[in-house]
Length: 349
Ligand code: NAP
Ligand code: ZN
Ligand code: ZN
Image 1: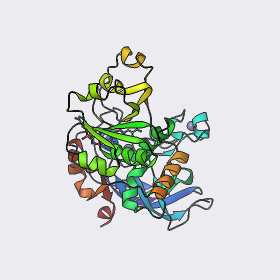
Image 2: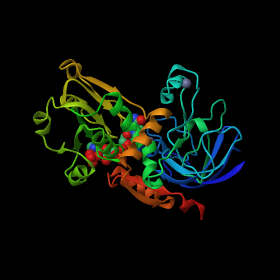
Image 3: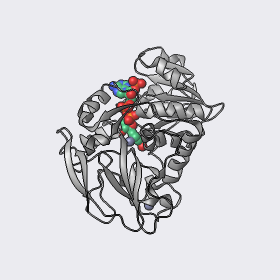
Image 4: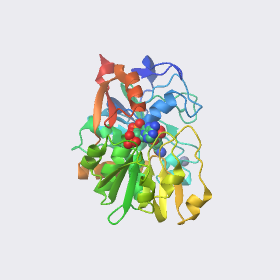
């Protein structure tokens, strides 16, 4: 057993604090990773506060993990000590269902094994995430970080990056396509960078004016605030694709009206309340409303390589783990430009 230092939420209403647990000894196909940085996703906060229900406590959140391979099992082929690697939102899946076979493990019929707030396949042992000093993961679920990307700024690619990359690819963002990104947070700012790099025309829809300059700097062609009551009329029928990254409920009917005929709005944010959608919002213009969950291992590696090629990484604010509770509060206020990333060396002292 490998004693591991971490920060955990003891329960849904308690702040995160120091916690210790054991990682398993690496098996023949496992990689032992010395964690260097871990991004702070809004999903960490939702789950640590049990906002979606069913949370497992104590919880060590964190699924935007980057680190250095320390040791590998005897049968590991793809990684060696010293490699820069990443682990995203899941660490296992059934490996045999149609989704797993197609490389869409996030939609595994048996349910993917989340990096945290989940249980190891076939066991009752809870999984613990990246707010910790090390992790042991089967090499099938480990990603390579391109050498030109700084590790800390690459961490958010493992969730925010792939969660926006996957729907942009699936719905064909590229030259001649107009894409709107609703909400300029962790996911949103990656969506802007990626859609821009794919050649799409990108508009940011933000709930205030404050992020205008940032949005344009990040690669947006246009910025609009949804605080402007005329917006929904002025931009009606404008977009081929809308990525909705907002973590609270919006009036989806208004946003659906911004789509062209046959356009699609993809829900990425997960508010705690159920949306109300009028059938006419979809019927008029044959529009669709869809959702998308992170991305499979193959596509996550493709996204990382795309980011390496285009020199894309996240805009971050680095924090020591001791600041995590304050970071959660600031995330709720929208006071982060654009991802908190934990320096895991703060756990090791
Ligand atoms: P985040 O960094 O907190 O960004 C959310 C953004 O939503 C904010 O920056 C803000 O953008 C907007 N927003 C927040 N509160 C708002 C309010 N009261 N009214 C209007 N807009 C508001 O969060 P994130 O990490 O990007 O995650 C976003 C959501 O995606 C979360 O619900 C998370 O759980 C979910 N998620 C889903 C997946 C998936 O696979 N589908 C993966 C990861 C995360 P503006 O200031 O620009 O309006
Ligand atoms: Zn996430
Ligand atoms: Zn499966």
